[in-house]
Length: 413
Figure (cartoon, rainbow, N blue to C red):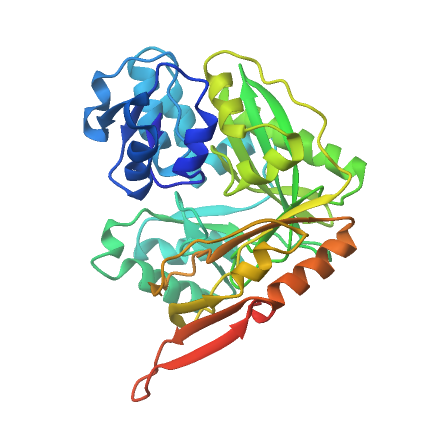
């Protein structure tokens, strides 16, 4: 198991890997790795990431997207999958991914990779506007934004590349903006959660969303999606075709799709579980996805129960204002956790916490609950969010002092 910060926690790994009696963790220096050592103790062996080449195993797994290349290289090195490195490239590099989806007849967008400022004019001409700009291997919506004009594209690329830090970042990819159909009060996009076993996609479900916060920050996911059965079937068919076009034969996938007037369109394919999906689908399917995926990697075919559709299971994760520099206070969580509609509530940050300034998602908390219907879900969520209060330090403009903002959760939109 190659471990780094990612879409699952150390506690998720501890609970989901109890079945495995011969476990080696390859650890990237990070908070998750430290917690894994503490939780597993002498139940496992530990190897530093730099020493991975000397490890032999029956399966190599990671739930950290930025470590897919490392896990793939080790799989190829010990003879588990000769083409693992090339398959991982098609998942991690969104430019390569778009080309391979197009070769499979699935692509509906124009794309251009921007490796530096000299590529900006060419990309603008090839893709057109509006477009979405993002790193070719980014995650968490980092540096992702919609661009409306050539001048905006030039400004965004200068900001990204024209610094010492920018010189060490991956290239950007510009893609045609996919216009969603009217879907309010729900989002115009969904995700498909799947496990792949010996090249066969086994779909766990289609996850509904609430609308993005600017620019592309997620706040909420729920199951069932509430979409018509025929549309769900179309979405699942597209997801399966994407997995096969990218030659993914094992592991978990999290495929984001836009719901357009012309049908579902792929936003991107991720070779991992989606963030918090293990918690949500443990309530939907009654099983642990870490256990499911790891056993599948070791040759055990996943067996799934029918998903629970009697109630709407949901998760909400508050995002800070874009002009905030710090989150300095959070209160109301104890009352929310005691509410009958709430499965669990946890604060995800230690206070005070500095906030990123690169438009990425930054989850302040995780609110998990359920409701009887989709309408009840929206009403329940609004009520619960109003019980929470957040305090932020707002970034000062020149010649002004920093201000403090107090705001309830239902107004953080």
